[in-house]
Length: 104
Length: 289
Length: 146
Image 1 (cartoon, each protein chain N blue to C red):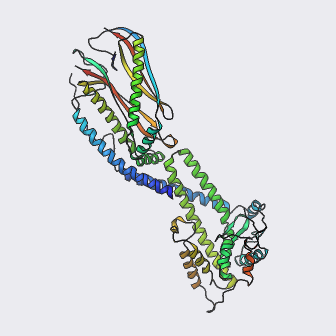
Image 2 (image 1 turned 120 degrees about the horizontal axis):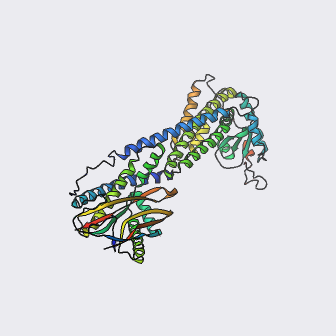
Image 3 (image 1 turned 135 degrees about the vertical axis):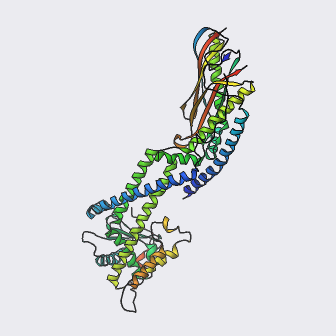
């Protein structure tokens, strides 16, 4: 599966558009991470736990989008976008979407 | 097509100014604003408090009538209070009622409706009538100056203003600054009232006894009782005890009178009137609201 | 009184540690930016035509928290309005760090160029009354592998 956030790939022709595919993942942090983050909030610096959590969450969203694309018979997803929104206190939704296509 | 990645100079998206400078300016500015607003509100309350008739104040406290622990003590205190009120030219619509409370607290206070509360703790420690008169005259002066209603109004208005502001901002950290700024202003204001009450009390003592000797005994008692951990004057509602003693001595030097001054003793049966709870366990307990 | 002492201690710790951590982070950012100077990242959508290449989606993310002192300063700033200088360096650090991580990923795949770079910033609610104390920055783009 070819993933990209550009629209045209030189040397490759799009033979079929399969529409929008999307993947989302809502995750909450656990208390341990919260406590560490609380300490970091005094001194400043990177919250590694949150960085990893959001990365895992993003990977999952991408994976789900790819699953959709595979289900509709695509071999590439073009123009991928990510968005993050907090749905509740301590939980964030990561959303990935793109256009599923069949490339030559 | 040539793609390159040149070095971009630092400090375009960030400011290089030391954050401590900004911190000092902002904190100072906020404190000044809070103090000015609290001061303004206090003056406003003072202005309106003087217009509230004393009868309204009295009506407010009428239902808090109490029984007394010692009828003799209260009679004595009230007689002395009436004499001091006269010496102080208390307007006729003001009425003073002294209450005696059988508790170890070394304190006395004036409250709404012309009520003065004297605790056994302070009465036991006073050596003569002059010092007792100083306490009473001080509290009567508070009532004359309308300090209880001013204090109550000020407390309500400042608390209301602080709550409104911090609720609007809903910022946990600035609450800290707001609260401490408002509190310090309120304390400063009440220190002024205490000094004024002291001055009025000294004048009435002069009229009643012809001198102010013995008045400082009260503060010597307070000084002895207060722990060494006493907070600095800035954080306290009353002026420092030493300052107050000094003021009495200063006032005394302005008076001319006989060289030898006789202090007025307390009534001979004074110590019998305390009626401590230990002696009379049943029915003696009473408490003011 | 005790509240005030706790508050002042937190403020001092926040200021001291925050400054050290920030200085160290900037040093690391600058040295790594020089290391990856050979990989330009551009925000252009149209890829270079003519040469054949393969593509791969690359990304880098980071969550950075502001220290207690700077958060207090920002709170004060909220009253008066104006430039919140204490959050400027936080966002600057987060963006550059995210781009660097994206470049690291691209470099590991042998890419020489990243196309159509997008940056998204989101705040993570934290602390009493949901005050914003940390931001997440995600940088992603298409690595071009020749």
